[in-house]
Length: 396
Image (cartoon, rainbow, N blue to C red; front, side, top):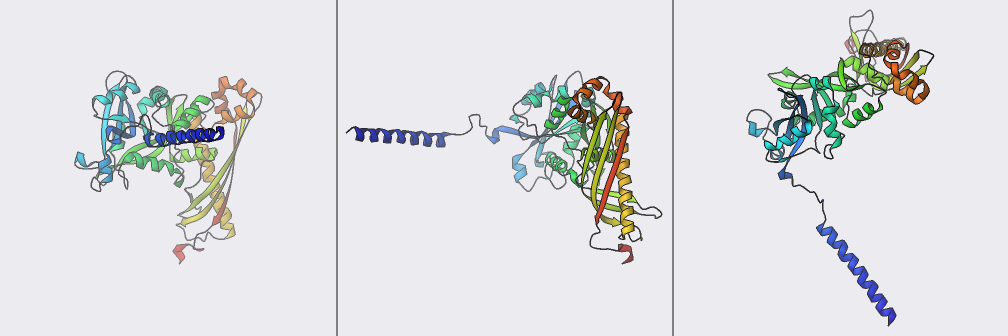
């Protein structure tokens, strides 16, 4: 009898657990779930200084889901056909500006899907962290959003043609993810920027974006790099100087390199397959010494000269010419960084990790050591492919 009651009790207990499980499955869900039709989904945010008084003007590119799904909207012409809506709001802080947007939008702004954060250079010159603090502190914005600088009103970027995409913010995000096709920009996520700022052993950089006029309409282009010293924008690198920085950081993973062919009125363009770098920083009594070693593999992509560049001797010359171009790009980036006394290469970070005692001794006057340090640059390249043709096309 006891055995029967025990089995019945175990059966009842198991049944109750199944009942609880079924209840959880069919009644579960996010406790703070919000319906899409009640939200304004933001994919791009721009930050300007307020035109009048103190504070910020924040702009938002908000997607119109119905227009995104419809094949009709083109992003030009009738405002109602555009797949996005541009909203602006102001406040003494970025947080209050975002809350003030609810005075203009019937839907609450939803920031978790934001792709890009475009910051006007005037804001960056005054200091980035006051503008970025909300995006780090609040739970909704993601740390994976891209940071960019612009000399223009960010709305001009959002309003520019998105090319094959419907919304410019998404297209810009895709461009940044494919940076290796040129290796002339250095994409930076919010998390990367914050991490390097907190280390305080290296200066930061951010990519620049601007608009250009083409065929009667505005388009955007990624163009160069802003140098951030401490928390403020101090100067810029052009695209080649940017690649000079990337060579040192070991972040050149693709693109093309064009060299002049001596004695010929023409050029050769090589496709970069990959690269690697090694940077050594050593501290001496009152000086640091830096050694930069770069290795790169490439293939001949095209030439505009009649000379046959496929011979072993010409291969060696190609390797020498491209090594000289790489070294020149590194030297140009180094000269620009030294002009602004900004250690964007992370020499201080390397010394901090290798010889912390020397770093602590040199850190108070690091700008001077960075500017005066002898830098040895060694570049080794290998041309490994010719393409489908072994002779110049001009002779075929």
